Length: 95
Length: 490
Image (cartoon, rainbow over all chains, first blue to last red; front, side, top):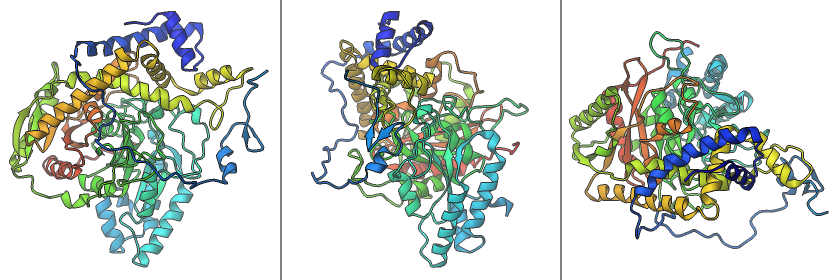
């Protein structure tokens, strides 16, 4: 399988990465080179094989459902680019 | 005092105990070496004040007889490990000036045991690379050069800063991480020892995530014993990481010098690639001969799905990366590029913040997980991964204790030499990536040099949670091959 220019733009949008028109042909070439490389997996017979979900056979650990943290709002927003009163600020979402 | 930086951790530990020198003197010697080697670009942040403060605390504790197993040992930390109040960037512009308000579990255990932080080490952006050329801080220089040449070589990647700093004696050991070979490949390129432990052995908490089902922390050091010493402090169960395994951590150092007599060592025929350089072939046979001389038994084994490990990796790892890196959106931390609406803000921030390789992998990952392609790519790759793991299980079921392979298909290459085709760079990890896909432990040990005088390494692959056997076998190789030090030119 290979991707065309429209698909490259669609993937970029899904990944939320701005891509200029000038970059599309180059990216398309690179993505297709990688897709051609992984294409060889189609020759493996995977009938009846379980997909791997965990390399170590272990049961998912669960922690107790208790509050073990909190009252650290200053710390939480400490690295944010834009905040007001412990809220993260973003461009207007709802008109 | 000038020789303090050439000591191993084991030697420094002895010297500190004997009061031959203080932790402060040991740290000062390393800070001076670090400063004099800035041309290597191994460190992206130097923390001399913190280092001196920690060294003083170590001296106080040693005086009281309360020094931990790493008391006063100066280390470098890959910039993928969150360090409290100290800038952590994963060498990506998108994390900008991120100051973690928390400490990674692995580094907190090193400080608990008395180690000293010298600074943060360079790496490929988000650990995506095999040459340390994708770092937003620029490439790292390998202290090793071809004989009679001034060409600047890469130290490998993604833990290139860790490998370079350890090889150039700018720290006594370093933390590193390995998703597809990022500890073992740079170790092989710099004549250092690097071990990727079994998946689940070290906590991933507080380590910047790349591909969560493959990422594992481990040490890079100048001897097998030093790697064992560091491993003991880094490993251990952590309730904060659901994939961290609750098994006791052995005293790995006791495995050094243990007899390997009667151990069965597998030589996988699928690792004998067409067109493999003769010197790699020779190194591999030599390694096998050393193990045989030590009493091990060599057996040919087959790992039939080996050739599919790298293509499966380049589906699984980017898929997990695209999901993990969704968090870099310009809202809660790091870089933000202004825009008139929120979608454009995300898109501009991520376009500006991610480098080319990261963008490529996020896009591949997004594609293989997208509607209509998930089964053909991601699900198939996860099935192939099951088959790769089964290959190893079959091999170990026949009584094989460990598997010997070359660590890399070549020695270090020049900066910019492999820039054109991303797949060409990916092939560097051909011998190491299978180990991550199967969650097994793997160690790279320096074993010789190529015709141009560059270091080459061998890899030993072990059974799950049997790192001890790797240390015992690695020690046999180290005793036979000797240790290699890069001549100082900087």
